[in-house]
Amino acid sequence: MNEKDVPSPATLDKRSRLAFLLKDTVLYGGAAAISKAFALVTFPLLARHFSVESYGIVDFFLMLTAFLGVFFIFGQDSAVARFFYEYEDRLRRRQLISQSLAFQLSLVALFVPLMHWQADRWSSLLIDAPERSTLLSLVLLQLPFVVLINFSRNLLKWTFARGQFLVMSLGVTIVQAILLVLAVLIYDASVKDIIMVCLISNILFGLLGVYLIRRWLTLPTDMHYLRELVPFAIPYVIIGGLAAFVPTLERSLIDRLLEPEDLGFYAVATKIAMLLGIVVQAFQTAWGPFAMSLYKKADAIGTYNLVLKAFTWIICVVVLGLSLIAVPMIQILASERYIAAAVVVFPLAMGLAMQAIGGITEIGIGISKRTHFSLVGHLAHAAIVVTTIPVLAPRIGILGVGVSVMIGLGLRALISTGLAQKVYPMKWEFLPSSVVLMTTLTIGSLAVFVQEQQKGNLGHGLLAFGVAAVLGAGWLLLFSAGERKKILGSLLSRVRNI
Image 1: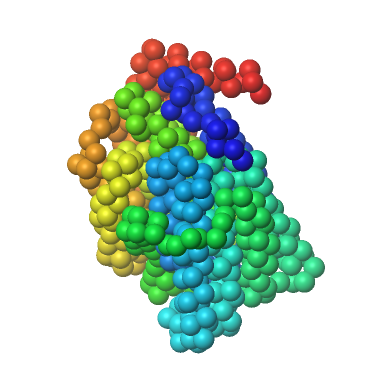
Image 2: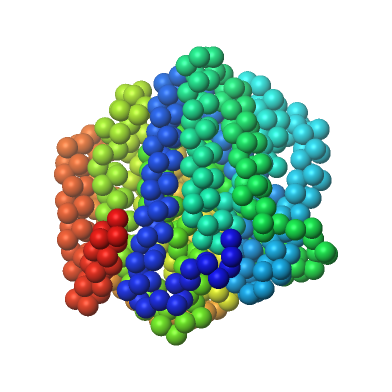
């Protein structure tokens, strides 16, 4: 790929920037939707194949893979993303990229064999599950390939290599889904077999990722770029570790505080809530390169504000809509056995929405390179989860876990946004988005309370009202007449080009 062929939103006017962001969001959203569609094939298959308790074990070890992967990625995805645009020369960029990858693989080579050697000891710290030492060993074997997949996928994203990015993003999901279906239907797969399938698919796509980015790789002449990358990345290592550790901690607390089947209920609730991730993941994938390529422009804040309002509006409607259809979704995908999970969907989805909105308004921390300020919000999130789940879960069950997660993610977004304004002040238009966000939170929380009182029809009515209210009032409240015209113009432009 030639660098001059890489498009840049910085050269566009505001309307064209919105069209650019919308195109990438739709593109990545389509990829995410296809990925989720294949995940929706395997999710009900696994949920029905295993007992509620066994499905919770599968979910735990999949989360553990993500948690451990964060440490060996060592924040290098964020560091390379930030410093890639600092250099214009391709040779310097190749050295930056190659030194970062060499550093990550060195960490894997150093620590994974030691962890595998002590697998029996480490596994005793996990949930009580059959063959947990073997399951941990299979997780450890995946880590080199998790690093390669993550690195190649991020580099393809930041270089706007959209087609190859889609191959990596969709391919691993599709292949893994096919293998899981075969394992369950033909071989009557055990929990260990499911983790083995993940290992096979990660090996295949880890190697494919290296092939796709081969033109960006070279032999490191030295490791001097690490003097920039590592200090920048260290806060992200802790942040990524917390982000991956907290979901693992949530499941460990459920295992200790609630009934065995509650771990399965919570796993299903997170899967339904993560359908929101189709929107969030698509936007965040497009937002990172878009925002960082634009921040030096004097009129960047105008574009940022329009994006903030549009995203808040869309995500709030999706949160309420997803909560409205949670019960039939669970019945279709997982069966009636998991219906108790429905009440947790709104707080989990609302937490994800607040986290995603915070990802926009805390952009100043990344721009300023003062990444250690991001730690404060993430530490607050972890502290809320640790302190409130033991209080709420014994009283209101898994709903208490969902409420704790929502409070933690909301507080994290609020703190990070405030610190971003301190280190890199920007003229954000917070009020309109805050009104829509609080309206969504109020209506959704009231609906959950009503549902807990065994008044499901009234709760569904409140959620339906919320969807209509946020959809209509948000359009008028969030955008001026001129902004509505620009948004519609961008949408029409994209439709004509389809």
